[in-house]
Length: 165
Image 1 (spheres, rainbow, N blue to C red):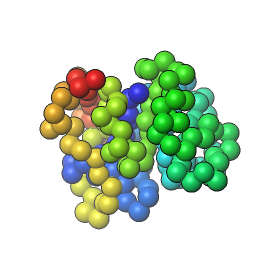
Image 2 (image 1 turned 45 degrees about the vertical axis):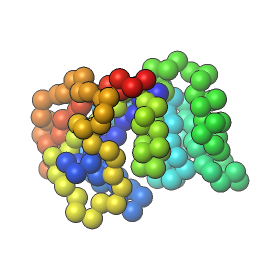
Image 3 (image 1 turned 90 degrees about the vertical axis):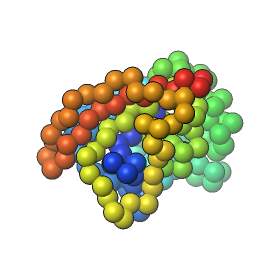
Image 4 (image 1 turned 180 degrees about the vertical axis):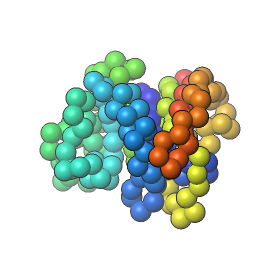
């Protein structure tokens, strides 16, 4: 499993259950990197999707501790054990963790790669953060794009590799 997300310079990724930024280049990158793959998300991330409905052209797995919650059109799992059992059915390099914050923080050690869009900004009132992948023991930067100006933001796309697995 890999993970994909956008974060600002302070490693913030969200505020009040939503994304910090809506950046067209990041959305395009997200679609490209997850198309045809299996995406894993928590209940709140699913509920934040338009509709809410499953992401098209992807197998959607939704994890919720609430056993009565069922995301229509998705594979619903209700524990980490069920999630790992389900993702084992797919090629390892075709599974992407797409959020939210609690899942990123609980599962990044189980991910082989992290695809991070770094946004050159800081959101003062952000409330959801990830670890700083620049400083994580056993992780290294594999590649990084040049800075891309997109709307009001400058971003770059970085890929980190987990050497602990």
